[in-house]
Length: 125
Image (cartoon, rainbow, N blue to C red):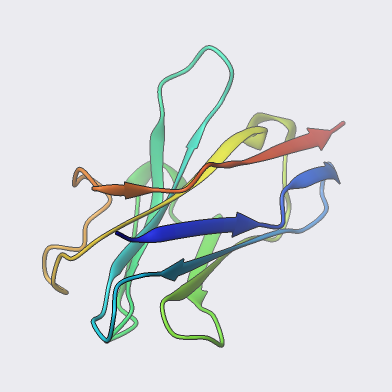
């Protein structure tokens, strides 16, 4: 079973940076497709970005492309999500997800088998 642990949420001033980290464990020696999703109050969950940990290839949701950056962390099967200038509409629960998809299938539109508990992000105006 894959365990995903998110960190880095909390309160951020509008215009300030946001950095979230997700660490996966329990997948043995394999590589993972890992992604970030978010859900604002009263809205459906939406994909932000994905990264395949073997190649580092990234993909972004069209609506959020250019605002977020997903990258590999220092440890294996760890990903980091960064936002340089957070806005109040970026508030919500941010979830890390993962699955065993290969590089070509590691897309924000896929359904992911493993999910973290989520981390709350509040952008104060």
